[in-house]
Image (cartoon, rainbow over the protein chains, first blue to last red):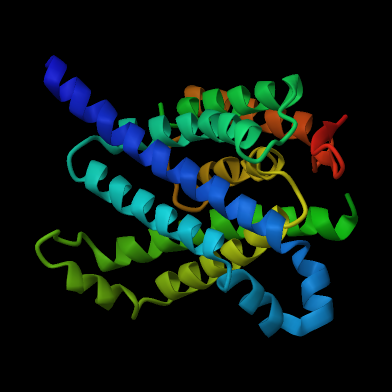
Amino acid sequence: MHAASQLATWSMILAIVFTATAGDVLTAGAMRRIGDLDEIRARSGFIGAVKAVTGNALFLTGVLFMAISFFSLLFALSRLDVSLVAPASASLTFVSNALAAKFFLRENVDRRRWFVAILVCCGVALLAR
Amino acid sequence: MTLRRWLVLVAVTLTASVGDTFLAVGMRQVGPISLHHPLSLIAALKVPWVVAGILLLIGFFASYLTALSWADLTFVLPATSLGYVIVALLAKFWLHEYISPWRWSGIAFIALAVSFIARGPSLTQHDPRSDTVVS
């Protein structure tokens, strides 16, 4: 593979990883702000819970990034092998999610969680072989 | 973590993996779709497996959001990664796909990761006064 096509390949994969991570972190941040859905459902019913989620701008931005990530995946799959794109994007997203959750959601990503993220990352990569 | 919350995580895992497998079965019945005729995807909505797959994936998103409302992202994602293993097992025993030794070792890695994450706390506690992490 040429250097230029290598660059294009990894740009496409990194675009998927970036948008998927942004979608996951924004959605998780929105759910943290909204609060426990079980309690909201008990208080305001199912419709109330749906309104609380779909009326949150952070959640809608997260869903937008998830949609962009999905179309980036489709775009990459139309040009690259699925055996490279699927495991590379899924496994890298596990690590980038751990980093983003630590810095943006201020989650306590301790040694156990880093170890688990790397184990899952390796597991996903092996599943694709 | 209560039993009910573990059941929500099981729902996240099962709806995602079984939903994906249903979609795969349905799309095999539909056949290849040309990028030049994307509207032919609408025909896929007439296949019961595809409809069932979509309904399960809606259930996945609802249970995933519920889990994120009371647990950390870095807990929910690995805890539900057992779905990759379930997809591999359904592919082997239902769709009769070949699982290589590499894939079996990937399954072992993920199962090990899930057993580790299940032993830790599900949510980071923050001190509301200083907004620092309480360990």
